Image (tube, rainbow, N blue to C red):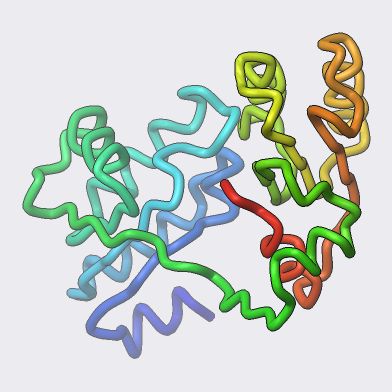
Amino acid sequence: LFTLKMLFAPPDILHVQYLALLSRGLPLELWPLRIAKLRGVRLVCTVHNVLPHDTGDRYRPGFERLYDMADLIVCHNQAARRRVQQEFGIPGERIHVIPHGPLQQLQSNMPPQEARAALELPEERIIVLWQGVIAAYKGVDFLLETWKQVSPRALLLIAGTGEEALLAQIRKKAAELGLEDSTRVRLDFGFIPPEKLPACYQPGDVL
């Protein structure tokens, strides 16, 4: 249907944010985009990740074709802009930086002290929060390795979920480093519903 629309009723501008097959090494989605270009459609591509995480250069040829087709590329920071320009040879005038704003409006009427009490966090400590979907490329293991260099006044709270094998690795890492106790690191593994996120963020001094 998408290809038929590009053939018979093409839009003026097509904005691409994510190509699921291309991100798995299958460049099938590039064909309808090429048809759109032949029909005079202007292509805008937002780059969330320059290349898919944990894939090295395996999928680089497909993304080279995508970026080369784009009339305008949007990156979320200057580092991504430099990579697209230097690694893929895209002229700087075709790349614009638009910082990524918050995906949700996290509002809470709960005071930080009350939120700390609800989560059983000490009032006198500096709370550093890491929250999200836990994946290998996000470097939680590196964060744990460096945490011993941080003042003992700070408590690291890691909250979120991920693949069970990876969560087990993180638990093991914290234990090996002697950090798996409530005085230095607290691991709160599990899915956090959106409505409970504000209470999770409220106690944090550093995110």
